[in-house]
Image 1: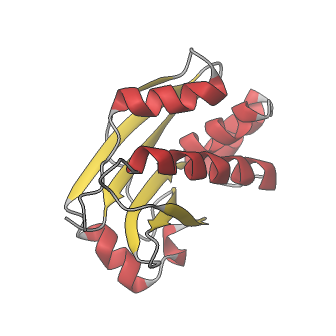
Image 2 (image 1 turned 30 degrees about the vertical axis):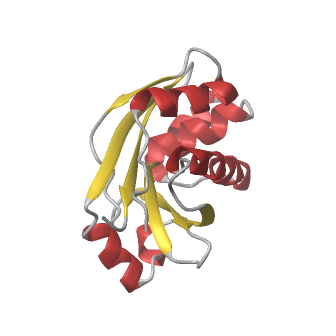
Length: 162
């Protein structure tokens, strides 16, 4: 299998800016944990044979601010959700769509076609085999993203194969 490209900060910023405007900033950041007990959601991308190829973990602030700012949910509500993880269906639906769009960042002319398989609401929902792949990930790309007028969140893309 061809090596799956992981995004660079400028690529993530460009694709998210199409939805959030030019005030959005993405830069290299700290990894988002995806182990049970972590305050994160995990998107899984698969190839045409339904094999997991990339996992993307987003922390609670990313979920809250990305999900809220897209449909102008008030900042106070977003901040509360960033702290407690009690996301509305609208926020989760928005983040699911963002993760779907981010699949474009994981493909190039030499890589297989990938698609978003699912967005797990907690790392505890991950099957054990998938959790093991994430923990053994050979490559990652970790970012901090600033959502204009909302706040900062983190996102990590992890290749599940070399």
